[in-house]
Length: 115
Ligand code: SF4
Ligand code: SF4
Image 1 (cartoon, rainbow, N blue to C red):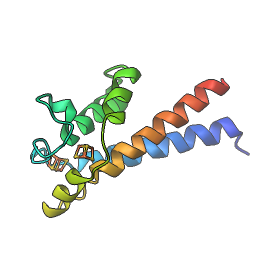
Image 2 (image 1 turned 45 degrees about the horizontal axis):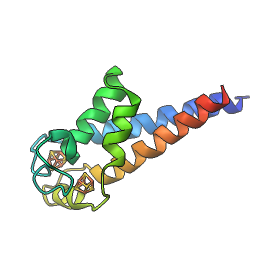
Image 3 (image 1 turned 45 degrees about the vertical axis):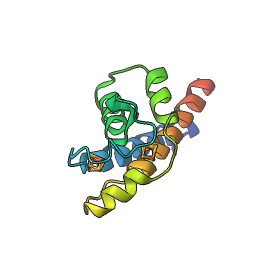
């Protein structure tokens, strides 16, 4: 039987897999960049940049957790990027993926608090 900690780790891994699978469907067209209301010239202020930062962090451990948190919590959840992706017929759901990553970081923080 799995302990609570093992179940929590499994659920974190499942969330990471779901997030990474979604990001892999991004076609890197960058059409979401200029339409993002938080974009002020830095690519990481857009959906495309946020997804790239999440991908680099989860896959390769690049970038600090503080920096990643700053990027994903600065998203305004307006869903413009998600609508754009839908029009492109991709399966990317950038807003949902950003929100899911917030939940992932919260879960990880909970787990660290328990250990
Ligand atoms: S998130 Fe969507 S609109 Fe933005 S680069 Fe990826 S596929 Fe293009
Ligand atoms: S949901 Fe977030 S990333 Fe997407 S366009 Fe709005 S502010 Fe930008």
